[in-house]
Amino acid sequence: MMKTAVYGAAAALVLGAGAAHAQSQKERDCAVQGQVMGAVQQARLEGVRKNKLVEFVKAENPDLSTEVLETVPAIGSHIYGLKKRDLRKVDLGEVAQTQCLENYDQILKLQKSMSN
Image (tube, rainbow, N blue to C red; front, side, top):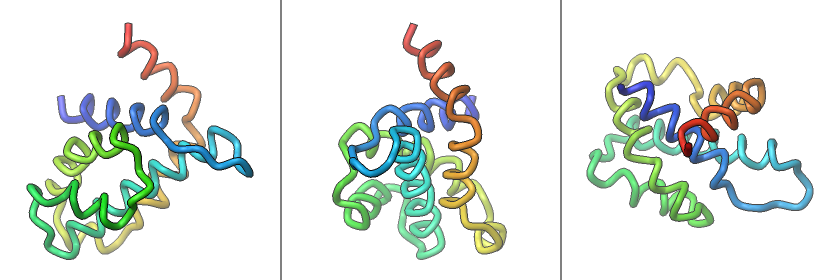
């Protein structure tokens, strides 16, 4: 069930990303996904309480849409379940962006199947 929430959040991130003219839609969407994952990781490492997570991410990334910010609690539930020592060993923003770029078509299919 947790994986479904995280995948759903990832799909929502992909489709809710803001616009930038120099990049492709795929690059923009995946950059936003990495940005959000990195911000949630940073919040966890800085000791931000889960109930203040959305406010923290919004303050760090004021350009994020409301739709993207709505995915933060689901992503936070997953990341806050990880040990801080494990989070210090990886850049989740970079990992999320790379995985998004590699699996973009599958993410879109998942999102489409979830909306039906």
